[in-house]
Amino acid sequence: NDICYKGAFDLMDSIKNGKPEGLKVFGDKWTTVYEALSTLPEREKKSWFEFDHFYSDVAFPEALPIVYKNHPKHLFDIGGNTGKWAITSCRYDKDVKVSIVDLPGQTAVAEKNAKDAGFADRINFVSGNVLDETTKLPAGADAVWMSQFLDCFSLHQITKILTKIYNSVDENCDVYVMEPLWDMQKYEGASYSLQATSLYFTCIANGNSKMYRYGELVEAIEKAGFHLVTAHHNLGSNAYSILNFRKNK
Image (cartoon, rainbow, N blue to C red; front, side, top):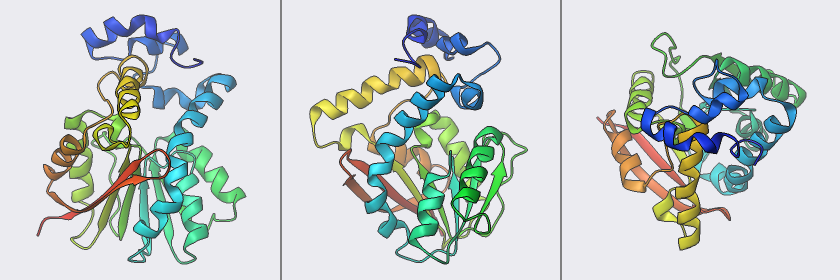
């Protein structure tokens, strides 16, 4: 209600133009809601982050054993947001180091949270827009984690992001994608709810992404030169999926 209500009046223009026309209720200098997050009014900011974390956080207890099964020493958390996964990871695995990749506004918040949690020596930051050609991902990751991140982009952009990851990792690096896939839900009502969430992406978030089907997301990632190793479905009470990819040999 705090984020979408007023902007939803511009839904038709957003569909026609492929842009989040409803975002202008928060100012006219943003092209996506993610760029605006650090400057949103406090009530709206609180609502957005509570919405964002409410769903994925409940899957963390089941996700951790999957991601840390092979004991990665260095994990890239792309779209790391406020640092919740990175901090949880450091508590779960005493040896792992995490690099959070996100927009400057988000990495500033995550850096403070990491310091407050006592992990300033194990969590570092790469600030930038992953779609920007000038943003380079450093090499050396044993694992890459993207939680509820790729649904913020179109299929073409997803392939572009994964191509950038492909160029920075080796064939032994595990790439983990956690998403609520609408065709992998336990209940039909949950599928419809996820599909309706796509309207938020259309009129507020970015104008061109949505909640994806299992097959179309896998296809977009495999176009970048990866293959699916394993798929875990129905994780947590909100039925998340974790897809594990590696580079083609």
